Image (cartoon, rainbow, N blue to C red; front, side, top):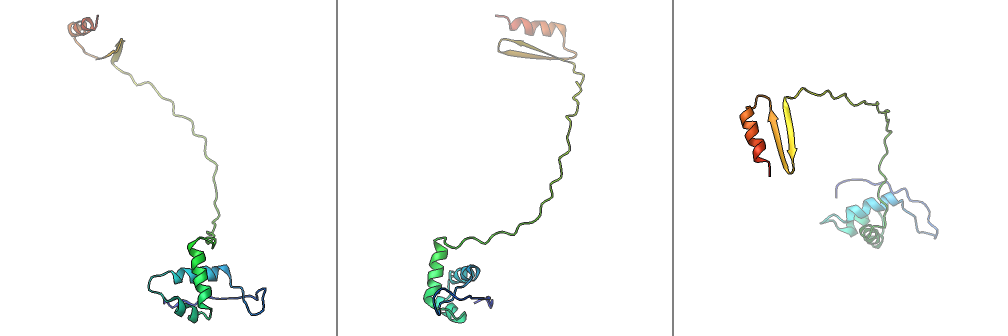
Length: 126
């Protein structure tokens, strides 16, 4: 046992002598009853409830009958997005020529030898 005291805050049920426990209380005890090594009967005694009721709550927890604890919602402030204009792309001066012949692509950089260029282009002819 972890030494946690849970507030039962039970309300009168629809039948005489049968209290209605809050869902949060049931869920917390059922979760604690699922811990390995915990005696469900002792846990029920510590909280002055019937052990059969705690076994039932544990079964209900395992099959998902207890709704999950609602997450706390935090306020969110959304700032309008600034319209970002695409930066103008300036063409960088390139000293390259690209020649596409069929499936072949020839990229020529500045300073290529004219004789070498002629040889490459002739080799691409069918």
